[in-house]
Image 1 (cartoon, rainbow, N blue to C red):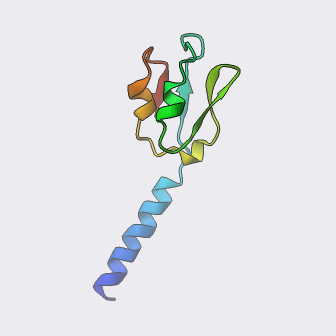
Image 2: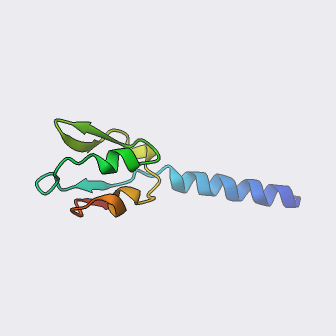
Image 3: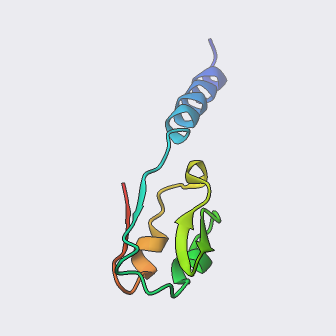
Length: 79
């Protein structure tokens, strides 16, 4: 077993960890529908539906928490 096989194994293990579903909670009662989170999401996980954000693809979430940081009302929680 060479050094290259160690690096390949670590990549496979990391890929398995990233597959897990991200949990995103949006408090729609406090949300004003400003759309900042939808625009800021680098992975296009959030979309606007009925003037409120919703999660379109939770598997695409990389837990960067940009949506949490940009929300002016602290309506989004990423676990």
